[in-house]
Amino acid sequence: MAMSTAVKEGPKIAICGAGISGLALAGMLSKELGPKLQLKIFERAPEDRDQGYGLDLDEYGQEALARAGLYHRYWDFSKPYSDSWSVCPMHFRGATPEPYLIMFRPKLLQKMFAGFGARPESNRTALRGIILEVVWGLPATDICEIKSEEEDVSRAELLAADGKSLGTFDVVVDASGLHSPLRHHRVIDEAKKVYAGSVLVHGIIDSPEDVWPKELLNLFGRHGNLVGAGVKSRIGVQRFGCSVEDNRTAVLLDVRMEGGDEAVFREIGIER
Image (cartoon, rainbow, N blue to C red; front, side):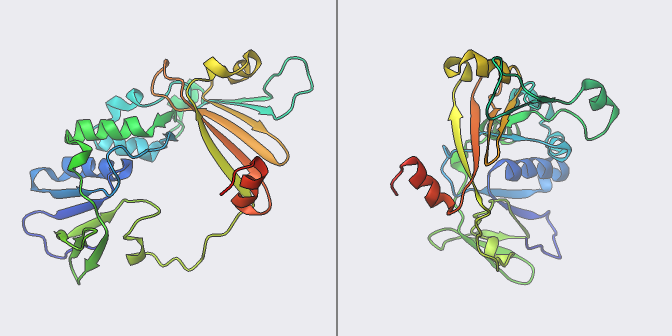
């Protein structure tokens, strides 16, 4: 981030990254600063980029929604009961499988303690779409590409991929994630990537109700999460659809394995 020490006509701000955090910040700045604000948002990804499946917003994320004027739409992109968990072993020895642990947030405790409120799974794509619709009313095609920044003492200039200047700004906010093209201007990553000993494999099921056996569905119930715990692996399934009728579910398999992801590909027969 680069900030000018003298702003006369209201700050000229650039937000690099039109994901959830960048757009939510834009909404908050618009409400706080009003018409004085000169704001541009830059996004390098195409409009139809995959936004991932779900996320759960803690009290700070929910506060950001409220400050952006969006909290009344919370349940338009969040799955009811998706903050409850059913935990079971990977292998059953009995005739009727039963979970050995159910975790949820009781309504009474949600009302009694700050920070203990509902944290349902929210659909990333739907959340981003609502922010664009409600806060901006702009299609994603209006957002430009971004490559890098050049700074002087008080202001920052942004450059497009072809080297063309996108403007000079009093404040530049980098909200473009882990693979940010601006990251090297503010963070020195001396450590390299290190394999931590496990591999996480992701997948999506459109509707478990259509393909799962009855016994597995009974374990899942109406809970938002089902976790199977084993000695060397864990599997989790997590609902992230926006409504009761939307049963899309993410599948996450966590396997501890020597040799990194290449060993996993060899194990399941995928040639790279």
